[in-house]
Amino acid sequence: MAHLPQIKIPAVYMRGGTSKGVFFRLQDLPASAQTPGAARDALLMRVIGSPDPYGKHIDGMGGATSSTSKTVVVSPSTRPGHDVDYLFGQVAIDKAFVDWSGNCGNLSAAVGPFAIASGLIDAARLPRNGMATVRIWQANIGKTIVAHVPMTDGAVQETGDFELDGVTFPAAEIALEFMDPAADEDGAGGAMFPTGNVVDDLDVPGIGTLKATMINAGIPTIFVDARAIGYQGTELQEAINGDEKALSMFETIRAYGALRMGLIAHVDEIAKKQHTPKVAFVAPPADYVASSGKAVSAGDVDLLVRAMSMGKLHHAMMGTAAVAIGTAAAIPGTLVNLAAGGGEREAVRFGHPSGTLRVGAQAALVDGQWVVKKAIMSRSARVLMEGSVRVPG
Image 1 (cartoon, rainbow, N blue to C red):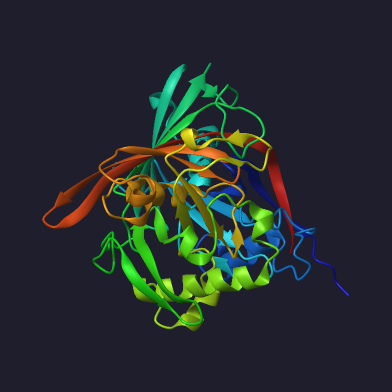
Image 2 (spheres, rainbow, N blue to C red):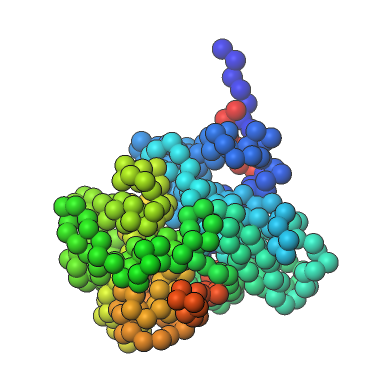
């Protein structure tokens, strides 16, 4: 029996925000994987180690969580006014598919540094010292992200004193601007509120009728009130992720919210869309102890938010969901805005399981429709390993 050798593909393993992923230049992928389709999906699944019925990713680069089962493909941009195109693939852990339906806001912080270090940005326009501006076309949702990447002695600065709750060690700060963040799932520029309302009555079989804010900003997100589903908003992962009844409830809410938002045509389709939409629950400020043991007081935050990602409570907060939180907080009357005390605001600091995060957004009512020109937040990124990843031929 003939045995095929392993394929060797240049790759970089990076942390971006509170996520990790395997980064590729499009030009380095095998020819069959340089275009979307089954070959690319099969390659990326094998890189991560999916599908894995053991749920461990022992034979791949993944970490068997929604935050670590990620892949990124970057290429020179074909879009005017942009430097690179960024495509994000969320690899399912125990199922055989890659979800291309949304962005990863956390890994967005690593795209600029990766592009610079990989020679995808013209060196002539990079400062030797100072801040490099990288304009990124987010190809999954058709949106622009502007990354401000610090440079020292002609190289990306990765170390620094910027602390991000959910990340153990400090690093250099990277500011991200998510331009015109409202988008439908295919990046076609749908309404920020697909139902036309900032709050809806969402009928969920077996659960009841819940007040919900369903918003397309950063990533399609369904916000519900924590108390309406029996929570306080101070919960950590262990309070939810071992509770099969709770996980089933959140998935049912997600399915019927997606249906109401027009993201799926039938609730059964939600099984093939693990990445979008997200479900989050909000509550007014309260004291709690974060997963690190750090005390968070009610005075430290404007509201509390917990979010589900790929069927589990996220250990911190997804970057795209943070954009949705900041956007919804800026619009009077949403559940997020009301949990933060209501009124007009341009930034919020919210509490999540790992600590706190600040995100800003400016909203305006234009011709009867809410418009947000950009949402702003800071993250950090770092190369963990570079070289080649190997995949069985």
